[in-house]
Length: 185
View 1 (cartoon, rainbow, N blue to C red):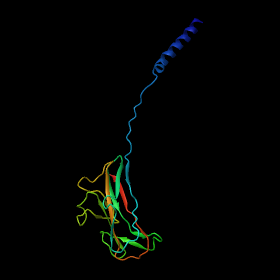
View 2: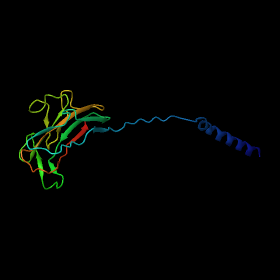
View 3: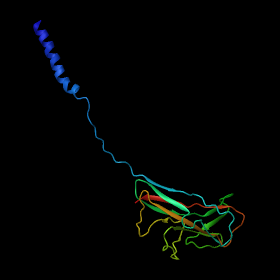
């Protein structure tokens, strides 16, 4: 009987001896290290320019001319920015009539020119006046001596200039789209 009680007592002591380290340790710290994904974000404070009725072979500019819209860089990453335009289409029947976007900013019959200028830029463009033509081929929006990429928090103000076709069918509401995009620098 004494052997059985001694065996039970030794078993309990052994179980408690093994359990004390687990009971004594009530908390511990886990360190997790992670890196978030890069976020690319741009925003525009204006997304529409309504001109109303326009005349042939006439230049129209946003008002104010070069501070009409603000592009703001958000996210967590420096970006390179690009701009591209498209043909203008008749709103009522887009496939039936269009103005072709010029590839050099000039105009012609049913062909229009579209330009942009960033505030502070007076040297770009064929006339060295800061105006750069928008074409159907994507081109750099901000490739200047200050550096080609823009950082989170940076902003650029710009304006637009439209040169209407020398001849077009009147009384048709036309619409086009300009796309400004960003990629990681």
